[in-house]
Image (cartoon, rainbow, N blue to C red; front, side):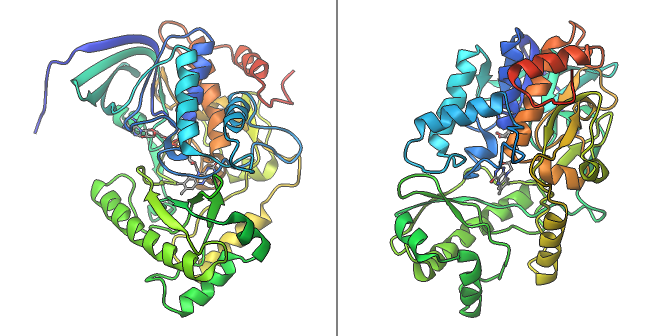
Length: 432
Ligand SMILES: Cc1cc2nc3c(=O)[nH]c(=O)nc-3n(C[C@H](O)[C@H](O)[C@H](O)COP(=O)(O)OP(=O)(O)OC[C@H]3O[C@@H](n4cnc5c(N)ncnc54)[C@H](O)[C@@H]3O)c2cc1C
């Protein structure tokens, strides 16, 4: 079947960003602050992606133990969020309502134009250039024309629809399990902390008591996000295909069932949780791994091990290799822990992130940032966390703003890009 329509070209901008998660927000802010006019399209109803609508309750580390490696926009988001979030004692924990408003405020201040409920559904390509991105919205279909496009969809929708090559999962096309996060209230954090209880260990008693339908030993738990509030990053949805709506639907249904089991577990087994209530599951399913769009270089495990330095690096990062096991077996769990621990860096160590992993192979004006960048599974499992996404997002945004009117992302002066990033605060110790 061929579907064709005449649709309006609603916008002509320098930079069009698809996806308003941490990568998309950082990209939009960096590009706009560097003088570009920017349109950002977000399919959901708020900015922040998995860090807000996805209910991920905390930012992973911004530091390598010594240096603040996710500096620049990452630091600004963290500091401005903490200035407003006086209820939570943890610097990295996220109150999603505060973070949603903060991203909106920051993008409005930078004069980034953005719309919600605006989903990319198609891409027009001409001579290795993306010419139009096509969106569905309440007003109908419309097209956006831009010099440079940045794919920050997490799933690589823009690049894949343009025809870019992508990698997906392991040799059997299996990706890391997903998680439907959950929000909790009524937790007595003081009592919980004083008790010294470890929900990861007590879990095994609940397994013996038959509390869960599926005994999953990989339990990350609930993080404090407010005075009595908690964000639950727990439960895994196995064999879920993030590119298939039926699989996603099944995952959401299963995630909501798991949340009820966790409510019983915490209430009955964990001190301080006697009055806990499930206030809701996230509106956006937590996908850890989806398409990895092939760029001019694929950042990989050997680079991680070598603490690699690149001439064209746009930042450095240090979070460990964190590939969640694909099953609940203790063997897979042990292998996960072995890999994570054996490859963990010492304080002050980091790997370089070359600009070439953001430039989509075969396309003149298409960049990626965030969790769909060009990396093998090992590296993706490190750089996918939000501070990593701020690093790649801000670099893609500055690069896009430096491209000429034909959007030539490889024609930019990489040294100028690096110096602009350094001015933002980016951690680039090897760049003069
Ligand atoms: C369960 C779970 C727990 C995690 N825990 C942590 C943690 O503790 N700390 C941490 O730092 N990181 C954590 N992460 C990782 C981190 O949250 C994500 O990898 C990160 O948010 C990715 O950022 P992003 O901007 O690339 O994509 P996302 O955050 O996924 O944002 C992508 C945005 O694009 C939009 N979008 C998608 N497709 C389209 C389309 N076709 N058209 C328009 N818009 C579209 C989406 O609605 C979304 O808002 C976790 C991830 C998961 C799944």
